[in-house]
Length: 132
Image (tube, rainbow, N blue to C red; front, top):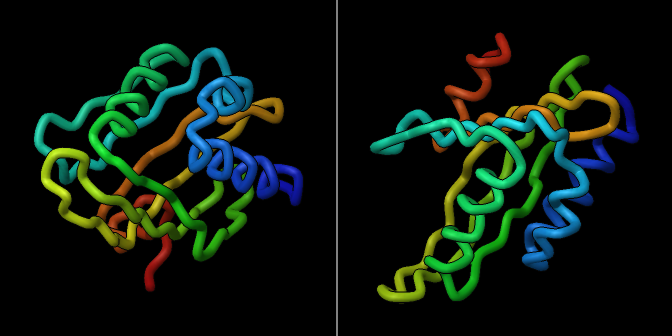
């Protein structure tokens, strides 16, 4: 990985926070796969740009406000480990969300190829062979 890859991650999350899915789409490899957190009921893998966009649009539709803040970014060679904070407010319930989460990101040719989401940061650390 390189500083360019870290900047790619920052640009991607900034575009997500602006709800600019067209810009996010440009960052994705055509073969992108996004893995739901394994802790979620009905966790699945979204294959391809269109499937990921549909999933993320559902997130936007569920929240009046939703953002992802990068708290820490670790370059692990062929992967990035991102410690993140999800913040939002449910559209129907009004319930606020403030959660520490993690993503493990793999890139290929300057594009995001794989994103694994974890609600438990310890699981993300274990997934990349690290401990707290």
